[in-house]
Length: 490
Image (cartoon, rainbow, N blue to C red; front, side, top):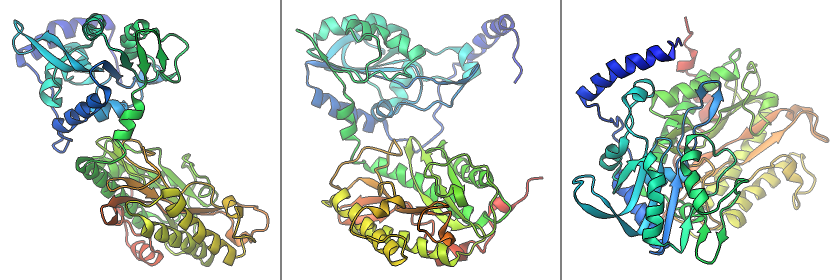
């Protein structure tokens, strides 16, 4: 990437591009047609303001941009709660919710004053920056395309803050905790709020303070509670993310063969994700063969694949902010060995037993997870891998929980008792490392995890990732075919 001297760039941008962009009146463009409607975000903000009451103000801020190295930033992703309330994907934005309402100048007629309950402060339109980094919404775009009641450019936040404070005289200010990595332009924009509320350094791990006139609280618990039960629109996006993920697992099974590498399989997953419209992988792709299959969050992904090994693949797509989470384990050569088959069958049976338990009103830990535990204990005991199936000996082979909620976070907000509209992963596993005491060496380096995304429905459940085979016979049959990963690059 070649860059010209700063002075030359400024000259060209100011005297050339500015005139062109103004003349063309370039507008922000949303290319995706299946985004959640602005009205849904509006309803979420209204619900939150009802919980806050009229004597409160809430301030939410976008995620900071994070530097990767030198002048390169990591690909930007919005803060979950900010996105949940706005659907807004740009950095350096601040949302202020004012249930009591405040009088501001109308954006339609500057001679009039209107009462608004929400203001989104956003980056200004700037032809010079937009030529380099893409079009921005601007205040008008935020109102028109994201359905905000009122919007201003973010340089107005400092001057508007005392106006809001004096007008509302809020008894409670809701402000999210400031993380240690909360730096950059957004941190500077929010600094006046921190000064006003005396939220001083060091950075607060929680935001809880009360003086004689004002209470400061963290709104995160309220928003996270709202996120537990997914709306039909959210379920649709999670279904799309999971369908894309299942397709990638199918192609990985079809393409896998000895002589390939873990990173080639990873590349196949990510190719399918992007090809099918996924903006990101939901998390770093885990592709581990043999001794790497027993490392729970392995993601080096550099090892060559050899005949006779198992390959554990925990990879999933994120679509419009919502992440799936699916794992498949299959033999590199397309045929399970006897020992691999024995371990796989235990995990498969445990997963089936757990999924069969899922319905509204069931306790996740005490019923669903406990059911999977009992099947794994029994299976390991029958193989002689544990001596006592009544205790916790099985945990040396199965050291993680059964699953978790999915949503805006791949490990999303959940609750102890299941309700319709929740989505959970069911992911039992058995991991047998080389050299484990008392274990037949024939079981060494066999790591098996099977993970599916399950929607809790009013009368039971639905496995959203069912398109990707998990029965051994179906996997072996599919692996007889060739996939897109078998086409050589020339």
